[in-house]
Length: 359
Image (tube, rainbow, N blue to C red; front, side, top):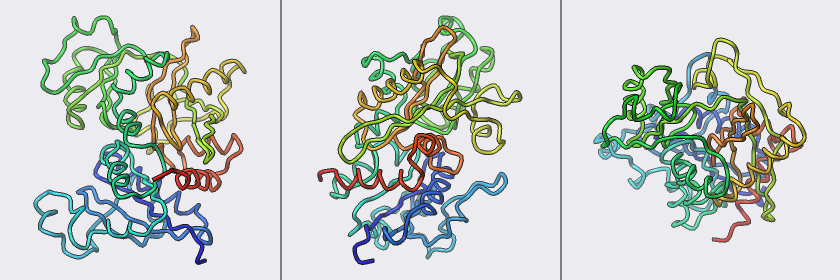
């Protein structure tokens, strides 16, 4: 037991994807071998408070339509900085101190203040190894506009889109005529379909923009890509070898016409084909494109790349996730399981890759 690897699971966080991070942490915690790992769990509340937690993984699941969260209710009185609306990351007694002495951190954080390079930069400065991509790849992968710029340069198709900042004039029908209808309006730096709207008429555009801007000061307006929705996992081993999983296809039920947050996590609104029923040539194309995207962004450890495959054979990258979900229904571990790497082995490989990194 003395030779166990000391791992800190950090989960929750200040982003709109807080509950999905909590569910991911519960799944990973359940799968880790306590004889191999000395596990420290640190939850970050929605307000940004770091708490050393001692949790039953079963408490970190979605119950019906009730989403789990990290709560400071049972903790000691919040410091003045938190009551003033400021995170207490560096306050005396913060659970941040629990990172001292760990061998590696698994930052199971999705979205802002976690998947975007922020915690990665903090860990780099502290000289602590961690699972997943570094600062640059995390930041560029989180920002959908920068992702598209990098992937276009790498020769991948990303569809037609506009970038809009909060300070800019709102576009009208004439400004977006070349994109056509329907449109998708989304925060540039969010995930899990949070803040996204499908716009079927230009009358719906103002409300869609308002929703997206409530999550981010930068928004994407995208032309709809009509095609099969595919996902592919990428994994980098400790020796640096990068490989792609068998791709999956998402098939929505008839009552849903796009993969919203509710469809993903609450309404059981989709079926999955793993592997996707594609020709050998298309399977190879998807896997190769996923590795190209991973390499172009200089990712590390893992990523999930999402695609559309249209009737004319165009393969369009929708987005890349540098810390994909690890919930019981998440596609990343499911795709790797079908490829021959089970959930527990997948976690072992990710930790081994992180431990191989130079400080």
